[in-house]
Length: 556
Image 1 (cartoon, rainbow, N blue to C red):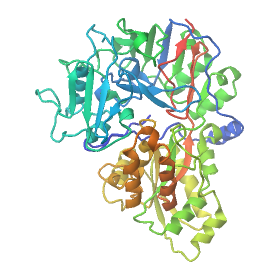
Image 2 (tube, rainbow, N blue to C red):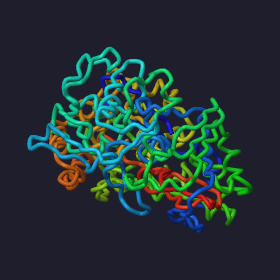
Image 3 (cartoon, rainbow, N blue to C red):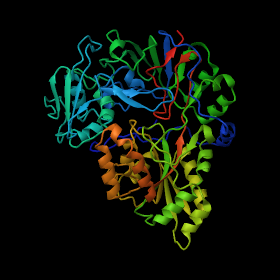
Image 4 (cartoon, rainbow, N blue to C red):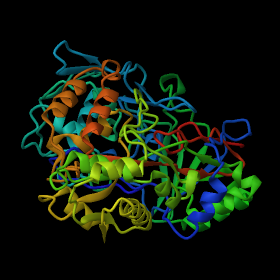
């Protein structure tokens, strides 16, 4: 997973091109995947308590400091650190926000500016101390320290009175975060924000006792979850052991089945896949944290034993064609582009139905409230009709230079060529793409390939980052450079509502944006993960398109 970086004054978000590179194998994958259905391999073994679960991953490090982490609420960090709220991820169901350390998902004031949480009784940290509201406040204040960057920072732009604040290590504290007693924490916001319960599920809302060493906390964190970091071998292995102070009576999300969890670091993805395909020895109780690569997907689908242990999301992160509306100003031309793009060709370039599902909406599958529509079904004839008498000129298509992005670009180029639109592909390094697309005036491209996965399960996290005018330039991800005061107002109105109240608003906004065609949804990437035959309760939903680490078990 690629975690994009953002300037400190911007909301931190994750944008990534999920999945595997496109190679010559995509044609074989398209053939073998043409009739494949979405699978969610829960495993046939009965979950039991005990045993060792091994997680094979290509990353050479895991940052266990919640301030520096963009880990989702159901992956690695959440095994060690709890948050005020979390996600309920159940096989085949939409994600839901639920209490974690708190007794509920928060009580909001009538004006929407104040959120109050009360902690559960009986919460104890790894060191034996009671988990208190002041520890959560300290954890949030640490996110403002210059030396502790890299984590999700939505709360920074929402909490009141944060200008100039640089963290707690010089004895200064945020007045917008109050702790009237050991179990109560109160947040004062700059504006109403109905998604605050989702924000409270990000890593920053994990408790951190005062007196921490910012330089070493990532190696020696104080656990609030069911596991503690028992051993860390740099670049090789991290071993988690049970946290003896954790109790299932005050944690309704984590099953904590394995006795030990070992993260095996720096694993070559292809080698890890081969080990899991072979399914022998300790690898029977292992799974891969990385998506299965194209070459292995072809191999896995031809192996009945391995295929039964492949979990594939029915859909996932969005790949889209952003149209720079400041340069492609004619709405009819943008509509023509939307009609002309052959999305099935894009799907084929990414491995057929095993690699991706055709996309029609900006809100991604698995996000509560999403509604399906298709304003611009592929139609060469409609595109040609809209382009009659138009002088479009040559369009520059900016793209990251990874194989998958280039393959998508080539499919788009060929589609537009069929309706007489000439496209020049400009492949660049990912850092250069970020600079050109998210900084400056956008004068260097007419089209660009984008990808998006929201940081939390809300349509707001899909739409606001990509289409709010405030997100143009300065590191924002509105790379379409789309400005619409009506849409800005609709986004702000929905963002101020509660999660339930806003649910019916988001699909209306989704379709309203699509009418202006600032971007063409191309495909939803389908992430596939492989596990050993001894791994239980292993599944992948459309969101978050990753396994739920909190409920996986092994046959002890």
